[in-house]
Length: 427
Image (cartoon, rainbow, N blue to C red; front, side, top):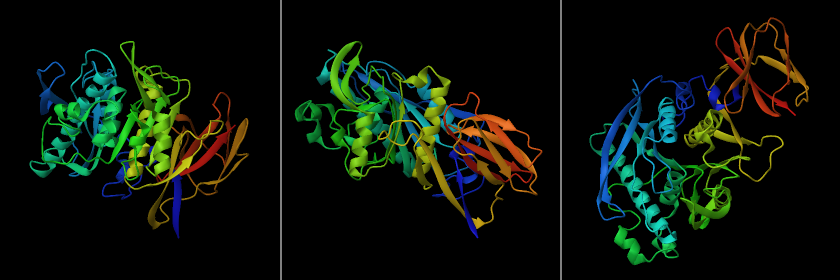
């Protein structure tokens, strides 16, 4: 009979067809490429700066080295910097681009027009609009390439936009600020038209700027109500102690100046859920602004959570799992997936039972008899291997010791390379 296995996306090591390439051979879920080719300073447009001069718009494009796929998903990253600074070579966007390219994505890190004066709410909104126009031009660049030279082999149905801080604010407004009347609360339509409208004139006219989803890393919207039914899905990560961009509703600051009230990721997630837009939301409890900039552990969490969201968009069936002892109502903290292989007996069931489960101190794992085991590993839900075990008996005792309370995955591999996974909960 057909079998369905519970697996974390980081453990996808078998071949599976989902939406064209889907999760084939671990692509998009794992680092299947070791090196990345970067094409620097690719021009995608130009436009007028806030001072009236001309700004040339360039991007760096990251491609997995040796990739032979001909229809690849794309992530366009926009840097932070409070709309007054930052570049496409900032460390957070370059690391994100590199890490996702190693999973099989094409990534682009873009420059966009920055600067405002005086620093106030009107000029802040204008700065956001200019950045949105430039991001739209970058998206149109890849639609134009796909329709003509097809140099970058992009599947235009799988273009995602995202960013860090101001870059996330830019991506969110590009995706959800789609009616001119929505901006009249902040600036006049005459001022908007003088800037070039919501679509802008930054380059590559006549092509689509539609996107498949949004990656929001500590960003916000001017009004959460911009999100409406039928809008693109969103994944958000945000620290609930962010003093720069509000986690819920609050005032955003630029260079120490409080400039504008914004609706942060918590309200974005609630609005998306209320109108039926898919939203995955992770809260860094106690975390400040852009915590992934200063911590490799936070960066790992960010990459893994965004990865799970992206693969979900490719067709795997999502089953949310609320982490133990965490507040409810804040989105799905972790994601597990059930994916049917659609074939007979893809792998043996290797674990007979685990008891007690949940446990406060230790669990006993009982393996099926007659199976030659190669490796047993305990993995957390961010994809990190916590411990590995050599098993020479029918049982294995796993001590909690200094492990945090939460859900873990026991990955069991036999001598044929087949994998079985089981859930362990320590309280």
